[in-house]
Amino acid sequence: MALLVASDMFAAAAVRDPVPLPRPNPFVTASAADPQSSEPTGLRKLFGKKPKKSSGPSPFTPEQQTALANISDYFNSFRTMQGEFVQVGPRGEQSEGVFVISKPGKIRFHYKPPVKLDVISDGRSVAIRDNKAMTQDLYPLSKTPLRYLLAVDIDLTSKSIVDQIREERDLISLVIVEKSALVQGKLTLIFDRQSYELKQWIVTDAQGLNTSVAIFNTVTGKKPDPALFKIFVTPKTSKR
Image 1 (cartoon, rainbow, N blue to C red):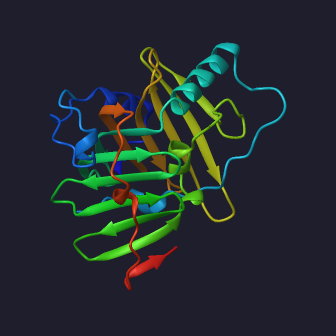
Image 2: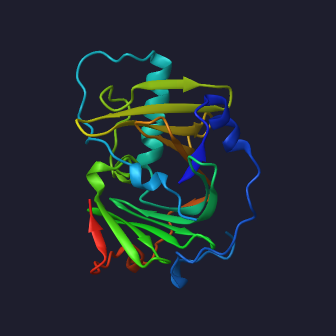
């Protein structure tokens, strides 16, 4: 995913930066199409533990709780989403491509050349497929932050999930801290403050390195091809 500078101001600016013109999306089946409408390294660091339901009083203000409820409603309002993304990685490398989500648990990122990479989740595992080296790494979905994006019914008002809220004039950011015995890091989700639509996410690993993905030209409700989410295990597949 894309590079990030650790500052909050950069995160906000990245959302507003100009993005490339849209290209035809290959992830939509013909029947669902609407006529009107070098490898990034950060993907290998998306680890954390599963969220738990919270109990007790909320640490957030009533206004913040309302915003969290609205963001939860936004996430839970759709089962499918597709669009384009621009990613910047920890070393400044930039890449772009198209993505498609099908809840629960399924997603595919397809990168534009010269990057020859696909990231696929089939609902149980996440595969990082290097189409140049013809290799594939496999991770449990439950141990990656992608689970927050792919849940059918998520409650972001839970204090056991959201650690911090950052508010700006146009944007609102939720910080989810990942803590486990093996890996520590955080996931920052950035939303439009008026529509509550997701604009960007940032993964920060235990070394403080940031990977950012900004999404745009998103559409919900279109049926994707189920074959996009199939993971084919090959002799070169490495399980993590």
